[in-house]
Image (tube, rainbow, N blue to C red):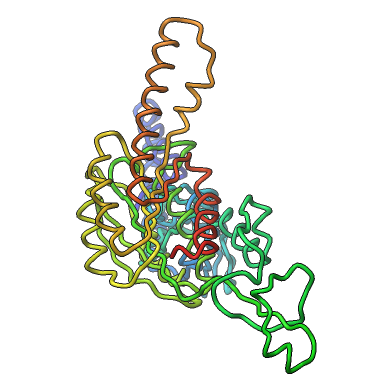
Length: 434
């Protein structure tokens, strides 16, 4: 309990009277009377505010919220007393959350319910905890303030921001993938699995004609195929120190997660199973499975992954995949490598290709392209240009080496990753290589 400003004003007034009392003898009696009256009023006011307030409090919020997006929190206060309360609210939100419109001052009438709404914006993925709410109540005369703590604990999960992914997923559901740059690699009817019989259409190849059905129905009947279903897609997610690189306020790991979840959604829509193994930090294994809950299960395993200071060991991760994943799968390695990682990555690809089809999605810093795009004016500019150009040439040779080992390689900047991964997946499905 702390004194409020009016109480400090009363104390200052009594102090002035005490200073003037020696000069006016009659003032001393007045000071004593006023002091006794003030002490009684202050004591009664303090006793009233010390009592627990007749207020119940509840918090309402979504327990799964996206990172870097404002989300609403509602505090509901129910006052069962007979007098109005002047109070201040402060909700103990997680420390890494930005907050808007908190703390709040309000007057709560008797026998009424009020709602206080504010917003939070998490800056990182992971778990967050709302521990409780502080309610600071003013005494009836406004001389004291008393803080009461309500233990309201709520756990929230901060997931990747799916605003862009949701748009991509909607396009995929509506069969309009071309609007985001995804290209269909073959016409429907020329896949690998039989889908249905239909009337012959101009342009159908002779191998699509079902001659038995044509003889039975006395008209041309074609077989329609679709891309093979029930295949497996397994993500190898690098959580090592390379993935800590930050661009436009987002680290490479966050951008890789978004691309992985988009491809998982598309693959699940195609009837394939999706799974993942993280390495270079927290090691989490999710065996591939299919169905409506596949992407949700994947999300629940990766939403709180963070990039660590560890070095990613590709060969150890490849050996784990070979022991855990017995069925042939499309293994997608999401990483960001340097020259010194090349030998380890080649050994991992050689290990994986014995059973699986391997895609290496290697993220490249956009700063490299920015340097090459700048005009060369001074000697320092020329040195920087040739250094970056030499690095990119070595990087390309490393990728060419991986191609010779049988891997499909992608070398791109993080914003290009989602569409490139889906295009690569559709190309693999259309070719029947898996």
